[in-house]
Image (cartoon, rainbow, N blue to C red):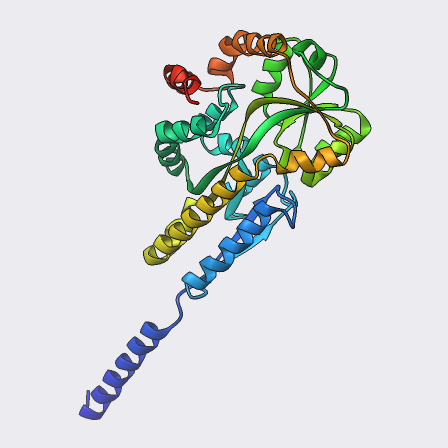
Length: 336
C-alpha cells in the first residue's frame, strides 16, 4: 500500500469514528396507557411527567399517553406490554396484581382506615413489592394511593344485607374476588372497567366499591346516587414500564427519570391527601346522598369482613402476604 493510500485510509477511519461519536443516540418512544380520562388530574400528572422526562433527557425519551381506556382494561394493558405493543401503563391495584400477585395486599377490606396505615404498609412491604415486580419484567417508577374506596349504589345501603339485594360490579377476569363475593351470598357481575358505566345505565349492576374521584370523573353518581360513608379500602396506583424498555435507556437518563417520578408522586400524594374529600363534596352538590353507618351497622360490616378472611387468605391475597399483614394488624389499628 502506498503512502498516499495509507493516508487516505487513515483519514477515512478518523472520519468514520467522528461520525459515530457525534451521531445522535437512539430515541426511546414510550406508549403509556391509562384508564384515567383525558383532563383528569391523574392524566395531567402523566403529561407533566412526560414533558419533564423529555426535557431532562434532551429529547431522548418521549412519552405518549393513551387515556380513557382506549387501549383496553388494565389486564389488556399488561398483556400488551408483555408483547411489546405498548411500553408503559399507569394502573391501579387491580392491574398491579397482574405483574405481581402480592399487590393483592391492598384488597383486604376495612383494614386501612387512615393515611398512617398506608404509610406503614408501604414501609413494611413497598420495597419488596417493587423488587419482585422487576423480577417479573416491570419497572415501578412511582406508587401512590389515589383515594379511599367507598360503596356507591343505586339504592341506599346500610348493612351487608342491603348490599345482598343489589348486583355488585367486579373487575372482569378477577374470578377469585367474584367467587369470594358469591360464596358470601352476594350477586356479582364481572365487567371491564370501560363497560362499568354502561353496566350501570342498563341495570346489569347497581353497586360498586370505588374511589370518589373516579366516580366523579365518570359522572356515574347520577345513577349510583348513594354513598356509604365507610372506608371499605384504598385504591393505589402506579406508573410502570416494561423492564426491557427501561434497560435500553441511558443510565444517566434513568436516574433523572426516577428523580422526576419521585418528585411528581410526592407532590401528587400530598395534594391528593389534602383534597381527598373534595370529590364527595362536589357530588353532594349535585344530589349524591351520603349515609353514615351506625355503630351496630359498622360492626355488621366488620363481622362480614372477618368471616371472609379464610376465603381471602390464599384465594384473593397470597397466604404469606396475608399473614404478614395480619402480623402488624394490631399496629395498624392502633394508629390514630
